[in-house]
Every structure is written in C-alpha cells, then in structure tokens.
Length: 185
Image (cartoon, rainbow, N blue to C red):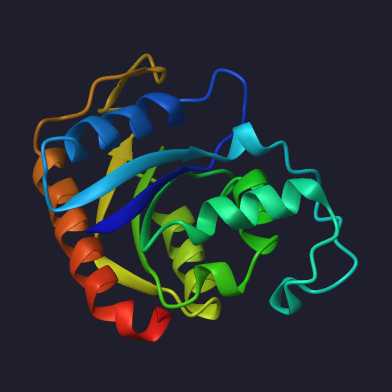
C-alpha cells in the first residue's frame, strides 16, 4: 500500500496551514487505498541549507539533514499544503525541499494551496520545483481562498465543494505513486 506524505510547508507562528493540513489528513482517513501522514516542516528545525555538498550527491554531514532524508524516503508520494507568500511558496518549504534531491525522485506530487488567490501562484511555482526534482505532479489541485474558506482570514472553514477536488488529488497521487513504483525500485 502506498504511503503518502502531507507536507505542511509554512512554519509561521499562527499559520493557517496547520488547520488545512489537518483537514487534508482527516479527509484522507476516510480512504483505505493508501496510508497518510502529516510531515510538518517546522518539526525538523532545518536551518538555511547548510550542507557542504549538493543534495544530489547525498553526502549529508548534518544530523538534521539525515533525519529529514530518512523521513522523506519513507513515502511514495506527497501532497504539499502550501501558503502563497508574495506569489510563491514559503521560504521554509523551498529550503526543506532543497535539502534533498534523490529522495523526491519518481514520486507523485499533489497540491493544496491557500491564499488570497487560492494559492494558485504558489502551486505553479511548486510544480516547477517538483518537475526539476523528477516528481510527477498531478493535474488536480485544491485552491482555498482566504476570503471564502477562512473566517476573518484565520479560522479555516472550507467550502464543502473542496472535498471533491481533494479526493481527485488523492486519486491521482495514489495512482501515479503506484505507476512510478517500478522506477523507484
């Protein structure tokens, strides 16, 4: 059975992403076709990239990188929960992604974005990053608006219609994770 990581990319105090990631996880628990786990970037305390060698060499010298690498290796695919900061992804998420290379390769990537424009610009940026890492990004995505899916832009109250979009993301990430399995072997 595929194991899918729900990557919470914002580390900002008071972040909205925690509630969004919890919602994604709760919806995932209604399924029996994959195992899901939330991976909170904040839990890994990754400083600005501090390894002396490029990530693709996998010559990690820092314990925090080794722990992060081991966690990401566990998964067959990912659903990235990302805020949109200045038309892009949070710096902490980009930093966490940049720590690794091979660990992301040949894995599926789905996206749940949130922000004033539904996080679409952040997701578009994240798709480019995923492509460079040889991840297969799926077409379906969830776009959550700070104006309509959050009360006072802070209390998450998603429109029920997003459940259908999220299930499409689950379906595609799980299917692509399975299809890519021979390449990861």
